[in-house]
Length: 338
Image 1 (cartoon, helix red, strand yellow):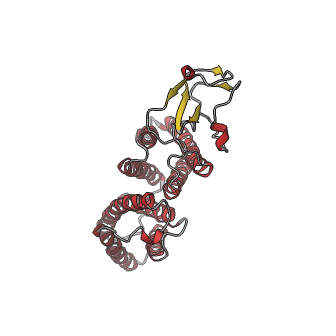
Image 2: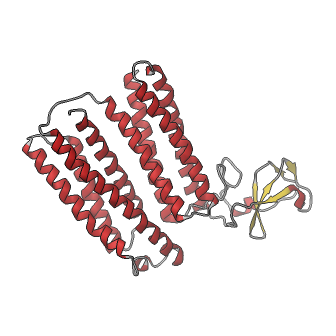
Image 3: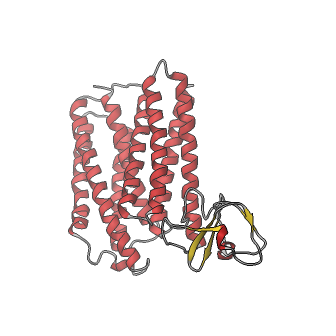
C-alpha cells in the first residue's frame, strides 16, 4: 500500500505539471477562449471541429446547454428540443458571461486538451486521497494533505471557470498559476514524507538556510516573471500574435530587473554547490536543481534574443515550476535530517 500511495503521488505530480505546461501553451497561443464556456466546450463534452457545427440548423435535435453562434454572439439552448424550419428565439438564451463569439478549431482543441489533462489530474488526486484513507490511523497527516490537494484541485477548477468568464483577465490567470504552484508544493511535501531519512550531509542547518534563501529568490523571480508575462500577453493581443520582436520594445523596468535577478539566483545556488562540495556529497536532487536553473536561464535568453520562438514560453514556465518543486523537495529532505 505504501508503494501504491507513493506511485499515486508521483502520478498526480506529473499530471499537475502537464496541466501547467498545457496551460502555458494555451496562454502562448492565445487559445484561452477556445472554449468560451465551462466546464463543457460550446456546450459539448467533445468540442466541434468545424465552424459550421455551431450554425443553427433546422430539424435538429438540441440539448440543454448546447451553444450556437448567431449574428456574432453566443446562444445557449434553454432546454432539450428539436428545431423547426425557422429559428425560434424562445428556445435560446443569450450567453451573458462575456461577448466573445469566435470559433477557431486549433484554439478550441488546445484549450480542450488543457481541460482534459485537468480532469485526469483531478482523478489522480482523488485516487490519492482514497488511498490515504487506508493510513488515516497511522499517518493522519498524509490523509489531511491529500484532502487539501483535493480541495485545491476543486478551487483550481473554479478559478479556471472565472478565468474564462472574465475573458482571460490577466490577474486571474496569474492567480491560476499561483494555485498550481501551491498544489505542487503540497504534493512535494507528501513525496518528501515518503522518503526514508538518510544522514549523509554535514552542517545541514547551514545548507538549509542557504537553500531557503535560494527558494525565496526563486519565488520572487517567478512572481516578477508573472508580471512580465502579463505585459507580454498585452503586447501579444495588441500585435495580434505577430511582430514578436516588438513585444518587449517598451518593456517595463521590471523586465530588466527580472532578467538580471537570475544572476543572483545562480550565485546563491553556486554557493550552495560549494557547501555541498565541502561535504564531499552532491545529492542527485541538487544536480537536477542546477540543471533546471541553467536551462531556465538559457530559455530566457532564447526568448529575448530570438523573438519568442514557439514553445519557448511554455518551456520557461514549466522549468520554473520544476525548479520550485525540486528546491522544495530538497529543502524538506534536509529538514528531516535536522
